[in-house]
Length: 318
Image (cartoon, rainbow, N blue to C red; front, side, top):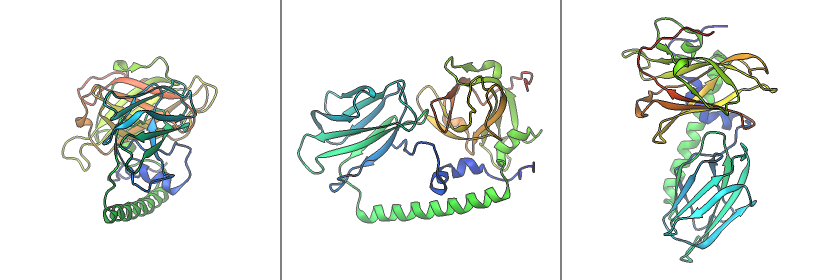
């Protein structure tokens, strides 16, 4: 295995958004978006919004909804769908067995009779990534602005695909801080064992055997990076591969992380997973909750009390 270049960026973190556009993926295609614009001629178009089991997603509208004018298809897959008292909000909560990739269509009708008279959304199941609050506007942005944003997005996607292809050709291991975490290179990063302080969720699909956090020291090439290396045991009957991760604090603020591992963790075996991002967690009020999910299926790993400061040391369990 060739060691990663010390100056390489977190290729997976930076290019995660382009991965779906570059090649087919089993990860549900949806967005944890915070804004949706509904155009007057949006008939037949429905935005896809990430939702998670037993967690609330709130739609906030700039126009009142007609009373009781919410249609859910298929029925019976939401634990609750309730309009706010003023008719400007809609709260939806998928049931606890809502699966990744599962889709429910929600259609609402507005009370004023203006165009568009209704709006439709697809709620797409995701094990961990969900939209908490989605603002819905019936007044679309100007066409020239939309065209400019579309052109910029396409140019960015092309550049990301080119960069991804180049990086994958150079190495199959992650670079930057995640690479350092994987190789445990002494002196390059500050690190602490945090396994003893973690709170493992009783419903976790895998058991955490060791955990070590990494953060860049001030003055280094990429300050503010962070990563966590986990050793997981798979007690199940199917292999497990991490598809993504998110770090969330008690206020609901979160940072999406990339996940990397050498191979799937086989049933009855141990394996390492590294999650990280080229940004510091300072914007979060940690201790935080770290959640990892697989590409297919509902199996997740949730760890509480994750921190990125202090000098507490614990012996390795590797």
